[in-house]
Image (cartoon, rainbow, N blue to C red; front, side):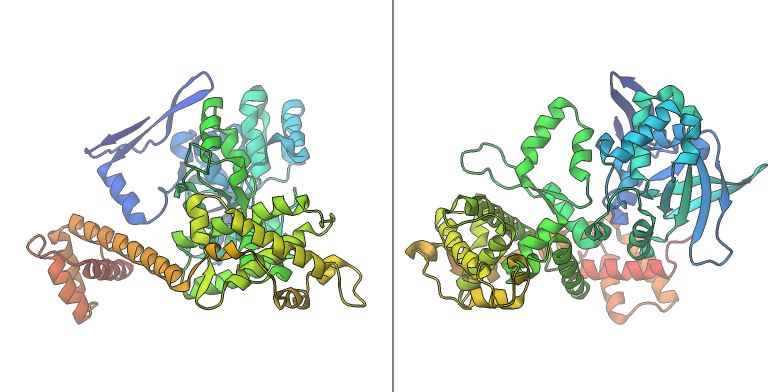
Length: 544
């Protein structure tokens, strides 16, 4: 239950448990206008998560400081009661695991079954048997008690190793509630400033994870690129496929286990709605994304090296491109990625039906054939029309026939390696294999031309997308500047002038903002004003 009020809320309670109706927990939260303002200014996808042990759990949690004064990172050792950990997870759920390389894998894994069995049969032995948790936080508030140091609150707690332990303890609220008071778990807590989280947290997760097999691809889940793709996947709606009635979305699994976790929290009715919105056939992972992209840009031999190798190569190239400019990876890039996914999956289903196909090299034939069609479609003036694919949510039959033609030729090339090469799959990993296919002339059906579009048309669509994004950002900037009001901007202007922190352009634009509503800043002026405000805040503006 969420109460929205235009009065000032002075309490500190949030997400307070009221009661249970059957299996449904009922909680309440209060959002006043100040909270909305903090949320809006934060630029985050959600508010900070603050776990207050003193208020929510009766007393601060005893701790041992495990770092010296002046250390690069603060560290603490804690022993967390099982009941408290279960309650924290019950309240915050998957938010605790967003920096984990995978979400809770449920009781299917042998590790989780063993954890739950220990809780049920030998709860007093849980502490010596379990490896404990590795966690990070943005900030930790400590107090001194009669017994020594204690942690009063933790901001943005992330369990980077121990998702299985945490999820299993939470599951015991239903299966072994009476045993939980005897369960204790150790926690290694490291305070990582937000600006260093992308660098430090994946390494902590990498070195701490030992319980379940972890793929290298899991450790870049928190790169802003993957976060953005996840956000697109939850918001961008595609039209119904031919013969279907419902719009749908594609579920991007940024960290392993997200699909299972998202479904595990839903009722039967919610599951039906979820599966209509995110059909199982429209789920894809980070390694899938890398395959689709690399096949389309002419690197099928890299795709043939396997999911982890292609993801490693993709991560490096994408990271370099992102560091130069992230603007390329916009909504249109994501929509075109979905078109590539549809093409890849359709061909993967069609190849085994062909008379010439012999099992064993499907994973090589598909990316080689796709790379060949994309290559042959591009002549500088024309290219493959993938925008129509995502708009219609289907791969037309003319394109399917062209893909099968290329697949037959790919099969012939891969199945006939040069002398001295015995394994076909090793031949498919070589640039020479791709060169051999790329240079072959293929005869596509006459209607292959209907699968093409002018390169200028594709570039225009890209420009239109950027223009739309720029317009939206400009409107949002203007709205924020006007909402802050003239008096606020007068304070910014005077503060910056007194300390000589403003350029002539800053002063000119801030003077316009300070005369609202008589003068309204343009969208470009509004964005510049917000940038100047950010600099002023970094230098101390607004601090008490």
